[in-house]
Length: 97
Image (cartoon, rainbow, N blue to C red; front, top):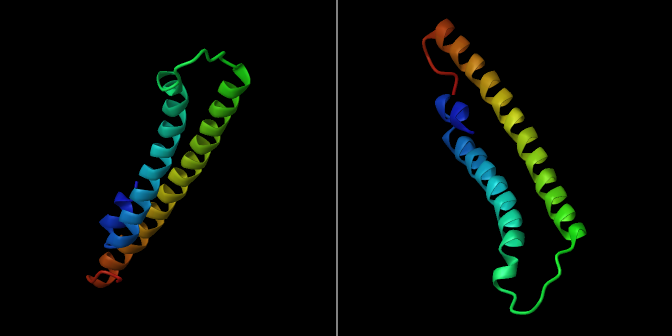
């Protein structure tokens, strides 16, 4: 993610998009693994509750859907910028920005 933006010379924008994607992935993994590993830090008896599991997985799914939409948006944006960049480069011999 963000490579298309870097290709056309918008390095800062590409890095921000890349970091945003990594943050969404990290948030999803942190939520899931913190729940799965929570019994390692609990000393007493902890009865597993399915509603906790379902809510955690639903939250992770929401983050995953947000990540998918973010991925599709950045792919379209990179495609659009690359098309504009390449067209301008072919027409004038100079990059547009």
